[in-house]
Image 1 (cartoon, rainbow, N blue to C red):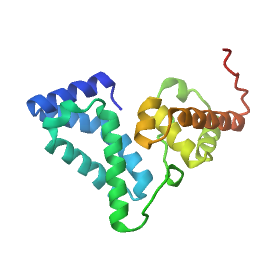
Image 2: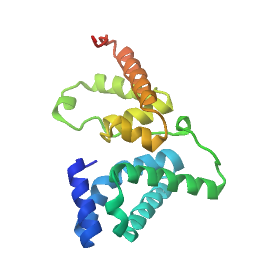
Image 3: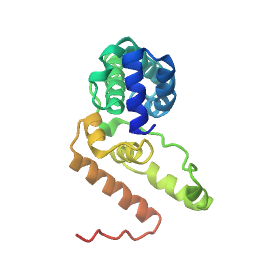
Image 4: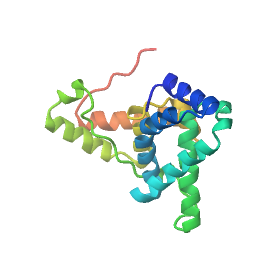
Length: 189
């Protein structure tokens, strides 16, 4: 996702000036991670696209109230989650869903020069370790590492405690480290 300052500026321009260019920029930056998040609920890419599109249409229709939103990034994630759950409820496919029911597809790890220096074998081991994580760990790991969300934001999105996020990330990192035969050092307090 984009930096918080960019999102705040787009939010301001959309709300105050009906700025379609700012809306387009917000959409282009936020759509890919929100789409992955929606797929983790509805399991079908086309339905996830519809869910995210509906959220952005609603955002535009309610743009005058946008200034009242404290954290637009969290607002978008929560809106996608709620819209996806409403879809599932209407389809009667699944009345209740937990984080453990979510499936997450992680983005390509080849995103920066440091990661590109890793060997193919090492990347395969990392990918396998991540794919082997329990669903809750995988969702939290993705939201932190790929989408760059803060613990507090994720807690609000998933309706869980910050301590749960901290514990789940520790579990994820420990499992990945074990898969790579890396010894993690405990922080000295």
